[in-house]
Every structure is written in structure tokens, then in C-alpha cells.
Image (cartoon, rainbow, N blue to C red):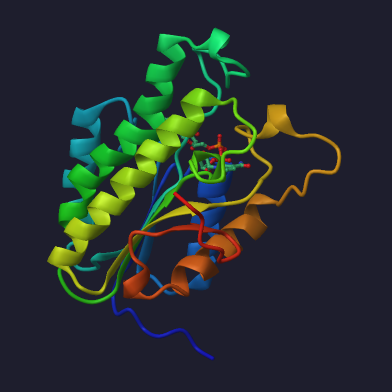
Length: 237
Ligand SMILES: NC(=O)c1ccc[n+]([C@@H]2O[C@H](COP(=O)([O-])OP(=O)(O)OC[C@H]3O[C@@H](n4cnc5c(N)ncnc54)[C@H](OP(=O)(O)O)[C@@H]3O)[C@@H](O)[C@H]2O)c1
């Protein structure tokens, strides 16, 4: 069956330099459904750094001009951080470190919220619009059985709340819009690499991207604001 036509539409991937982001961009390009597929990252031109709001705003202005004749109908936010300059995930409360916590919230929660602020006003007010933020199952409060990873868990939970909140505002602007948080599963990437162990069901970024795109395309507007896994399962908050 052929894909329904979106007309002249753009797809945008933020975090296009990451494993899943690059695979999403490649998959969207290969699908041939969009007039243009735009990847933004810290190394793109213009560059997008989640820690720099002025830069995000400048990317928004650039995107407005770039998509004037092909509105953004797919927006993927594939950025994220688990370990960085301030350390990695905590095993115990004894390891809680304000600098790491701030970095987690800045990259996993506040940055994506700034993308809502500067990119959501660019989304068309009618017709199909789908925005997906890569979250993580460990951000689920209801599913937390193991403990640990305070910063990453809490920052992803904050992201999930922001996605739900933005979905409500987006629906007021466009009843056909969908805005969701998606868990990609365990995927081979720089982010997951330190945690690979024998027996882990590790997906390639390409397989994860295919599954995520199928997942997003299969959702209806009544499912906006949800938190879903790559296999379609709805996750508890
Ligand atoms: N891999 C998994 O098993 C797994 C599981 C659950 C959830 N996730 C989620 O999936 C998403 C993608 O992760 P991934 O596995 O593809 O990891 P990845 O390859 O490390 O990609 C992470 C991306 O985030 C970008 N990023 C980090 N800090 C940034 C900043 N300050 N400004 C702009 N971009 C920034 C990185 O940009 P640079 O390329 O410039 O460094 C990179 O593109 C994340 O949200 C992650 O939490 C992944």
C-alpha cells in the first residue's frame, strides 16, 4: 500500500549526529515522503546546542525560512544524555552530585522544552503534524523497580510531563496534531555503550529507527500526549 501524501512537507530531526537521530534521518530520507529532511545537531549548519537558547531561537528562525514552502509535519527530538562531563548515572543517593543532576535536567528536560518554545510555533495549524521526543522507560515512575539512576530517571520523567503538557497546547492549535514521548528500547549507541552486557537485546540504530517511525505513524490524534515504547506498548508514567 502506498503512503498517504503529505503534500510538500518537511521532516526535522534534532540530534541528527546521534546514533538513533542519524538513523531516523536516513530512514526518513530513504522513505522519500518528504520534500526535505533536515538534520540539526551541534555540528550542523546552523548548529543547535540544547544549552544555548539563543542558538535554538536562531535555528527556529532559520527553520521558518527553510520550511516556508514545505511545513514541518514530522519533528523528531533524538537528543539525550546519560553520562557526560559531570559523571554518570548514580547507583545510590550517596553519589548524588548537583553538577551531574543539573546537566541531566539541562539536556534531557530543559533543552527539549526550549525546542517546544522555539519550534512548535512553526508547526502548521491544520493537517497532520507528528512530534516525537525520545524518552526512556527508566523515566517511568510506575515502572521503577530497580532504583538507581536518579538524575536520568528524574530528568526523563520531567520531559514526559512537558511532552504531555505541550500536547494539550498543541491540540488547541491543531486538532490533528500528535505529540508523544517514545522509548526506543535498548539501542547500540555512545549513550548505551558503557551499559552493554551479555544477553542484552541490543537493537541496531537502523532497526530502532524503523520501529520508531512505524510506531509514530501508527498513532491517532486521540493518542497524543502518551508515552509509548517502540513496540507499541503504552508505558505507565
Ligand atoms: N540507546 C539506548 O539504548 C536508549 C535507551 C533509552 C532511551 N534512549 C534515548 O534515545 C535518545 C537518543 O540516544 P542515542 O542512544 O542515539 O544516544 P547518542 O548516540 O549518544 O545520541 C545522543 C544525541 O544527543 C545529542 N546531544 C547531547 N547533548 C547535546 C546538547 N547539549 N545539545 C545538542 N545535542 C546534544 C548528541 O549530540 P552530539 O552528536 O553532538 O554529541 C547526540 O546527537 C536519547 O534521548 C536517549 O536518552 C536511548
